[in-house]
Image 1: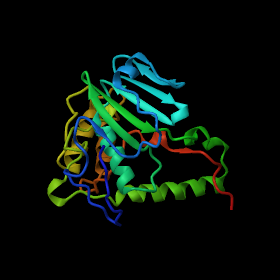
Image 2: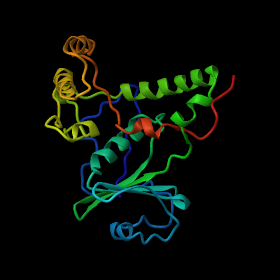
Image 3: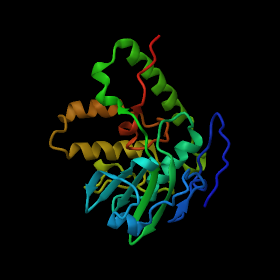
Image 4: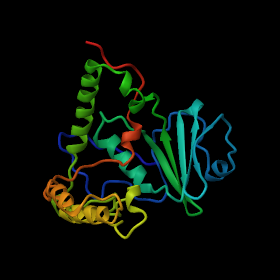
Length: 243
């Protein structure tokens, strides 16, 4: 079991040496007496509790939800420890961010098994059309606080890069089917790769429009901590405040 004791500061610095890097890591935060399922139990679905399949793509990933334990398990070829590292960093350095807690991960048979807490609530995008202006304003304020907490996390000046923890390649899905999936050393390099990628997409704008859009992307923008799937994890378990 691995314990962490990072103190929250106004401008935390996330260096390459901080996130856990081992292929198997379990934190001392699992709240139940019942043990976490093993990889073999997960593969054979030999759970000693009810479960739901949230996503199943045999060649890439499976996601299970165990309601009694409030546990989500992800495993498969597409799952990497980088996801756990980022969520761990968000929990450590951005306490106001609504994100799953990482209980740990392990590697078995070439697959990563990720153990996460279940974030209960309705998906925000499923409720947007039912919210009034006052509720939307309140939600925008809450999101602003969360985003600011992410933007406060910085990199050491000598370790600037865009990618996954450990200086791994950017893992967004849009990069998977091309030659652009890599670690970027600067915002300019990332922007150039992004627009080169867009230029090869059939729906890409005409060259003149494309160049104007590129000019609006600053090459000296700040690099911020984030997680590709955070947008799908923003949820609300209660109605927004009514003033």
